[in-house]
Length: 231
Image (cartoon, rainbow, N blue to C red):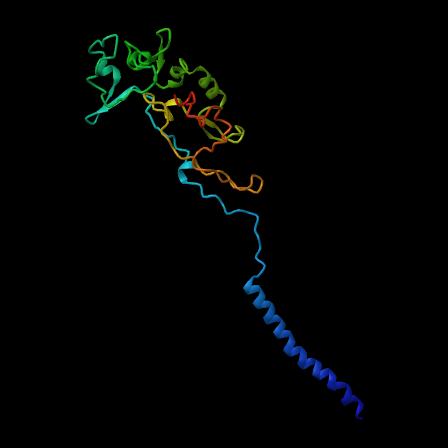
């Protein structure tokens, strides 16, 4: 009758031991998880914050594409005034009207290089023919042929809509919807941040061009000789 009691005592002792050890082990594991001594090195970088202006499809400029001007709350066509008088053939004199316009367009310093001399509601081509006011790209093509060719192919300028025309229409912005026709160069601007992906690696660039910039063919040498672009 004493053998069953002897065999159940070790089992009871093992049960009490497990009741103590198992919670202690679980508590130790929980403490290790909370302490996180082996932090996970996530290879995925944080998402790049892209400013709203960088993805805004609104055109930079919103010209009317009409030969109109607003004065004192009224809208006039250009010909409403210009048909009443004859402008001099050269426009190097100081203007009495449109004095808000500052012309900085390279060697293009004459109004009649672009505006038709007799019909101010249109532009003028190289043969004196009229270009409609809603087709300014034909005017720009007079001097900027390669850029106009690239614009036609979609390599220059901006396209809104769908790249895949089977999914939706494309809208090509015209020259003066980005460029001021009287001052075409863009002012200095900060570029949008680059993508940050695993494939491209960490993207960090200095604020200024480094001395090893391969695009700079000539640079100021240590002897003090100026490069052609600095002369």
